[in-house]
Every structure is written in C-alpha cells, then in structure tokens.
Image 1 (tube, each protein chain N blue to C red):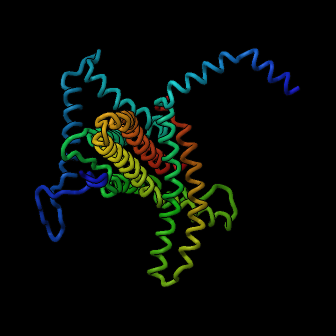
Image 2 (cartoon, each protein chain N blue to C red):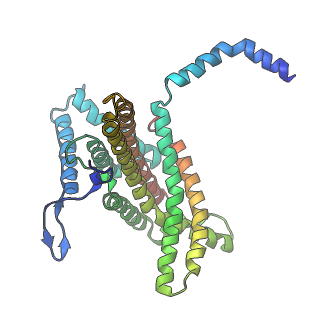
Length: 249
Length: 101
C-alpha cells in the first residue's frame, strides 16, 4: 500500500538536459500543463460566443474575472486594474492546480504542493512589486519602510522591522499555499489508508471501514473549500503587496 | 441580583437558546467558518514565516561576515517583532476586504 507521502514524488516522464540544467518534463509539469489546458478550455468556451445575456459558461467566466477585478478595485484602487491580467492568471492557475490535485486519479498530482512551484509564483509577485515600486517612485519607494513623523532612533528600528517583513513576504506567501495543500492531501491519504486497514479487519470486514470513509468524504468537501480559499488568499495578498508598491500606504 | 437575572434569562429565551444549541450540533462547520479557519491559519503562517525568514537571513549574514551568532540573534528578536506586526496587519487586511462578503 502506498504511503501518504508517495503522492508528492516527482517522476521524470521525459528527460531533458539543457546547458547543465535538468529541465526534464515531470509529472508536475504534466499536471501544470493539464491545469493550463483546463483553464484555457474554460475561458475559450466561455468567451467563444459572447452575448449580452450570458449563458452558463459565459456567466461563470465573467464571475471569476469580476471577482478578481473587484478585489483589485477595492484593495488597490483604479490603478490596480492594469494588473488584473497578472493577478487573474495567478489566481486561476493556482485554483486549477489546487482543484485538479483533488481528483482521485492514478498518478494524480498537485503541483502547488511543492515549494518550488509556489515559491516560483511568489517570486513573480515579489519581483513585480519591486519593479512597479521602483518604476513609479524611484528611490522614494524606500519611504514605504520609514514610519511617518518619528524620530531617527525609532525610525531606524521600525525601518529594519519593515524591511524584514517585506523580505519575508514571498516566503510566507509560498509556504502558506504549499503547507495547506500538502497537509490536506496527507490527511486524505491517511484516512484512505484507514479505510483499507479497518475494512479488512476481524470478523466483520467492510463494517469498520465505513467510518473513515465518511470522514474522507467530509474532508474532501473541506479540501475543495480550502483549495478555493487558498487561491483567493494568494491573489488577495498579491494585490495587497501591489497596493503597497503603487500607493505607498 | 444574580439569581433574578438568571431566572429572567431562563424564562425569556430558553427555547431560543435550545434551538441555537441544537442548530450548532446539526451543522458543526459552515462554509463561512471553514473560510475563517483558513484565514486564521494564513495569519499564523505569516508570523512563523517572518520569524524563520529573519533567522535564516541572520544566519547567512553571519556566515558571510563571520560574526556568528550575533546577527542571527538580533534578527531573530527583530523578526519576532516583525512577525507580530505582520500577523496583526494581515488580519486587519483580511477583515477590510469585502470581496467575499
């Protein structure tokens, strides 16, 4: 029986070596590609025949896009709309990866349960925030770290703390998503193991296995919720960081 | 005084409180509470992550500057402060966001 951590194993499907780097096509790449294809199909079908009164697909696509745009409007302001494509892409990619990993399939894999993937996404956000901040404000961007109207000593103290909290952002952003996805999937697998172990137990097989199976059904519902909420939290924090860079408080 | 108060409460809304307690047993976790729990964890990770990142930063500065272990100790304490600050700020920002309400 497979252990609960085996689902996170990276398997090389097609080895590629380029300039000393290992760029192999793995099962993680495959599931990211499937997520992208799923998103593309969702968006293309939804916007193929746009109508004034939207059909089901179009309404779903519009709802997701409006959700992200509303989030940017509220947290960044009118300037935030030009970043809607970025935040929308991140949101829907994370959402698709999270949800696809929940399908109990042979070889099913959740790309967002690996720090490499989530940290990559977080660094995209971090670098964007830095570029936007310096492009808009130049070195005035550093005033983000300086408290308004304070003395020099306290100011320096707060400056260090603000810099530390700024530098830790990409890591907390990445670890949060990775930890949520990993913990949820381990829990599902552990209870799945209980179903098999208790189902083959003693004089009454199948009877005891029902209890962990019921728990697993409930956990799956909770995991769907967490998959959506974590995608939302990732996008929300990305837009809050952008707000700092654009408006400097 | 206390007994009078207790009596009043029992007479007035015992039925309502029983109904509320029963509703709680029937629906232990609603979608809203699950989302709130996720946000709570998000705030907690903000704190832990900031402390760890600060300590790691201090460790590497120490390694390159050869000042083991002082920068790490200082940054660990400052990271603690920054962590509390970030957790508080993130929590306030989650409360302020109306997108999902």
